[in-house]
Length: 257
Image (spheres, rainbow, N blue to C red):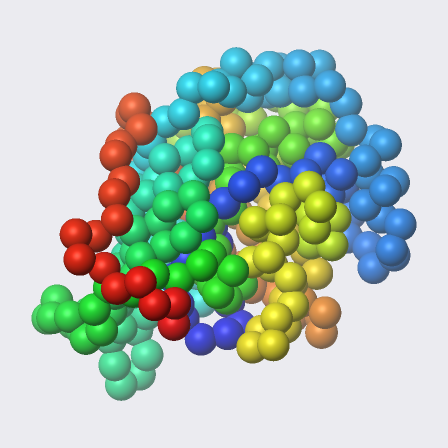
């Protein structure tokens, strides 16, 4: 779901489960922030939106989605409510060249290929671990993030309101510390943590809109970096249905690039 160059892989939407201990309402640089937030959560079923999310648990669904941020756009479908998978394209328009990367996202890795503006393959399918995705090109586990947000005290009394799409939904907002995910959500932590080629994000300030059936209909996120810069993206989801099959490409390469 950035500052580094465009590549795809596992934010909208949003990717393993996000930890309850990693969430609080306000941004802070203190080392003890995650521990304090862990003590502040409430049982999920204590709120109306939490009950809707709890009732949705064990009932995955698919949705068409579109994510916009900076000069890039992601669009396709995702399976949500369990470990995220899907198929989509990431397009980027620079002043002199149109670039598109097509992606098949599986729970633990992704297959990608690059095409030009005529749809011709520029680089054939290859397999990448999700940890190679630069911040801003990840798809987080939006449904799980919403469950986490619903347990924050600030969201305990969330009431149905009109979402930007016009649907009736609960609005949940909060903060997720990257460091707090290391032991409880290694997958997401590996994507957001610093690496030799990217600075990594301190955390994510996010807002999830959850409909009355416990489905995420919109997910706004701001990845916050140590230098104070931020990357903003918005994901909208529509066309909810049963989960769709996702399979690796017929003849993918296997080398991680």
